Image 1: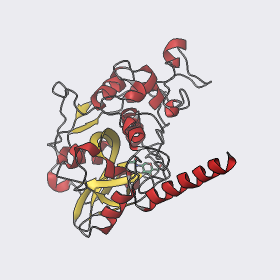
Image 2 (image 1 turned 135 degrees about the vertical axis):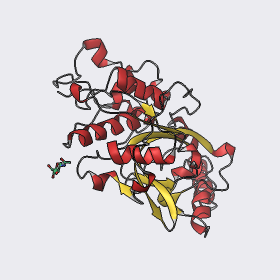
Image 3 (image 1 turned 30 degrees about the horizontal axis):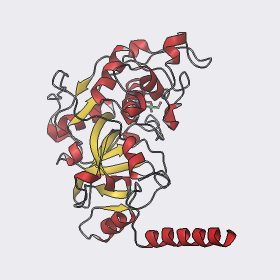
Length: 322
Ligand SMILES: *[C@@H]1O[C@H](CO)[C@@H](O)[C@H](O)[C@H]1NC(C)=O
């Protein structure tokens, strides 16, 4: 018996390593064959590789984290334009972190929950509060939206415009008031609503957005960021994106429809040009070990992966500051 079991273990290990050597782990989030294809392609504007964040995740698991629906109805959302700012005033490069030192909040980690829609929204609003007051502002609670926004589906997803509607109507409490707990994929009940107080000794303060609006052109997205701070955007993730490490991302030629992972929401903090390729500079919510210290760049001006189609922001309601 022992010999058979040992022999089987050896053959299983052998098969597993053979599969790894051939690069055939198509069910993992980061496919080694894809990494090789990207890095060996001379026309590629970005580098691919493994990351700790996706090391233990299958493609199906990673797909479940793509919690932003991009098929929502945007027609009734107000559109904000910045016609009073001349296009010529838009700088070639802009980084909110250097423009407003110390006021942009650090990279966060949504973990195993499709809550990107909530992270992108509260992170943008928190930065906007800090910028509007020229003072550091508290980290805001994605858990508030994940647990309490009844129009969204918690870890199973949400819509960018509905997240902003919630921030306008209800506002978000601070992270210290209602800490992020949904990282394991389980959504806790809405503590602040049930008990009328924080899930800690903190005072209950809601950070609200006075309004919310959609930004419908590249220039308006840029003007909104350079005047008020970061904005939230949704885009369509293909499998190659999981392997992003550096450079300016654009969808790979082999990213066919079976490799579409789903909608993902993030925070745009600036833009620039790298090796003549214009890009958006973006904060992701997959922890600081993924991508460029948690950030990434994606092609700008060509609606890459629909990144310029679902962009929202709002102005912080300073009357609701404690
Ligand atoms: C913002 O605060 C910083 C540091 O306190 C100060 O140096 C700067 O002048 C302020 N900026 C504005 C626009 O008030």
